[in-house]
Image 1 (cartoon, rainbow, N blue to C red):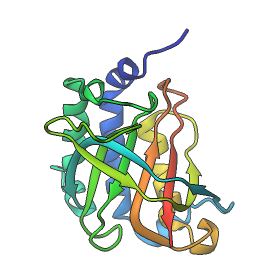
Image 2: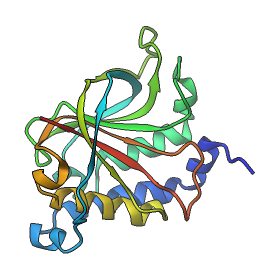
Image 3: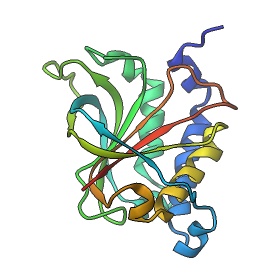
Image 4: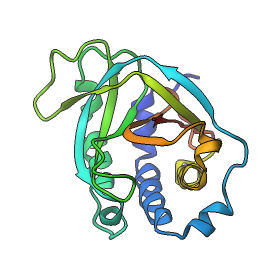
Length: 199
């Protein structure tokens, strides 16, 4: 049976939001704690062609998200409750995409968090949305485990934060990173692919 992606995400909304809260809290742990859960197998790398995403954006920091009043959970809740993804024109596919971009420095500084979809054209951007270009280049590709979002997302980001440049296939550029969510999500079998821009 095929499951409509938006309906599934709506049903998982609390779990997805919780995942981001736990994820940001995990970022505050020491590098030694993160290293204990690191993936020793090197990431794959991929040369990605440029593409565009239209979505809804917030400016935030990991420190702010860890304070209990972060912008990311509110953004997910708003997008899901208002069916905002369905308002995106020229969608290239049914995947949800999260883009982290416009980093002030690195994972400790401010960045734009954009929740939306890949599009074939960004000429028509609805009011309240933004368009962002993902630059072509070399990206480290890290896949989460399969499982509930509130479990797999903290784990995969802890792995990423603990991975060395050698394990990632290069040094992170902190220009644009993005996450791709499956078109059909099962609460116990969700798997997310994360692309990390490299220098």
